[in-house]
Length: 285
Image 1 (cartoon, rainbow, N blue to C red):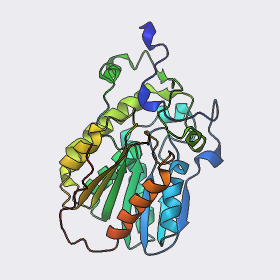
Image 2: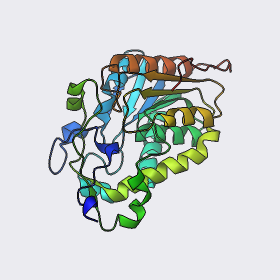
Image 3: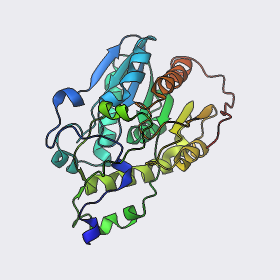
């Protein structure tokens, strides 16, 4: 078991660590931006924080949306706190945040990054109030072989420590990402289970669906993007791949284009009636 002494699953290597213990409140703070009758819920990724989606939030706020970017349960505090949470806590956080947004908006869409995208798909499948959804580097499965034995070893190997390797084209994008110096393996297992759950729910996703993925993504297999698109029941759906971007596509070299493509999708379909035409993007993974 010595090889597990410093577990370095690549799926979490993309983010930078800011503090050895508790994360600063400023770095992890949730936020509201903008105003208007249309709203968008933005959901951050596993072990991430709301600022990773700030560029999209600002684009939406500048185009008449009210944006809510919550902090998911177990995130933005300490690794020990994260170890006490799992998929149902993250789902509850997303549900509650959507309710808060609906209390202020007549029409809502959801978008997320990585695990946040998976949660966005869950909301689309289960909450008919959602009118459009954007998945950025979303996952339904993870391909690292070590995840298959994680249920058997998680009691012996409690923590995963990122290796420091990154797949970002724009290295300075790391300065816009915040994460823990170690992540509980119990939470990693919960992430795998979340993906499995949402995979069974994809047929209930009927809203206009945009799937975005980075061509350099070494974290979430690009096959996830094709699977998300194929399993959804959406009559209006599109796929766009940004070849230069890594997993953290919201802060990578194509970040402005990612935000605009996502923002325009939400602008087109939140608070507007879809004409129901099949809309498949010509780009393929």
